[in-house]
Image 1: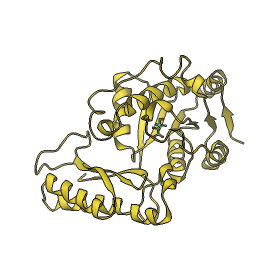
Image 2: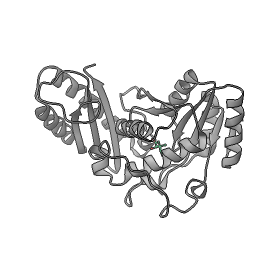
Image 3: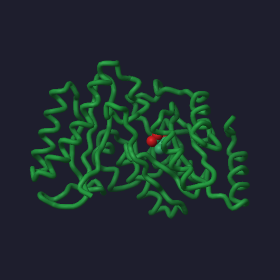
Length: 282
Ligand code: PAF
């Protein structure tokens, strides 16, 4: 079975041992309830290191008061089996007390400016503070040489890169491609909140992203593209939070600007909030 660590000292000892042997260590942070999207992160991690550690921790500080922290699915046994099959060497399974020894309210918080202000950051106040706070701790706990994050959480990846550069964490950050179901729906632990018919409907998000990229490529204005996407999502039964075109650093592109861009959507379908994105123009 995969080695599972719940004590920080034991995890550190294992990682130190690997490093003494000259092995490169990769890290995949997760909140568990793992699916093929997560396993693809582990596989990518394996390509960049000889040992892979994955963490499973549902982080209370990144959920808002009305979000799904209590309901978030927790499946550690299945996660351990899946990680083992994906080629992971160790699972880090800290308790809330290990992660936040002074308690969640009294914890040292990491706040990343600028890149957190728009989109998810604007809709989910405090979310990225919680992500930066836990990811910085996880990095200090695991001390990897490289860490892998999915590009589905596009803004999260930008936040992590900003933090790593600014706080000089001695590690490389790798963004992994989005893994999709056959319908085009991006894999997410939250997809299991969807009913069967909502799951079919949810594939519209990807189609809408493709249409946005094509419309920008055909010379339509950003504002026209964004408002058409919002209307399309509403007509398909979604309550969109945003459907926007941005530069890779998430700033607003000038009209007619050439170069790489990303279309990003966040929309609710019933009680489920879905996010997805598509990079284009590269
Ligand atoms: O993307 C996630 O699953 C989480 O935000 C992360 C990076 C594991 C931090 O809790």
